[in-house]
Image (cartoon, rainbow, N blue to C red):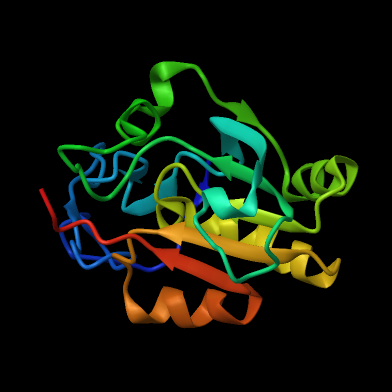
Length: 183
């Protein structure tokens, strides 16, 4: 558990999360709509810092990116939760799971970068669920990976506020924003 970024504390101890446009108003002991950001004593915490639910090496075309280093393997990671609850989500087992589901393992940013290098890939994708809901970890991994010459890819629903996007943008090399409005 780690202090979250992008929130404001109200006089009554509730917090307003400014990570995504939902701007969840979170009472003491409660979580935001993503299920992974919790108010404890007027401090917003991320419950999924370093909690990895899935880790794999995929073809980059699976992201799907077809004109960004085609034919390259990409190291892919995710956590649990999402700031959207799409009816036909292809990864609902991950995106709608809670941190209490017990199928995450903890990793440090340094461990993730070591695993990327060990996989033979020069790329990492934050994918399978919404990467912005575990912003603090994605940011730390992306910054470290960038310093090591590893390219960062976001596979996202794009439902994020401008400030967090601007802060992480210098470390992101490519992104796929999935359209989530069709039935």
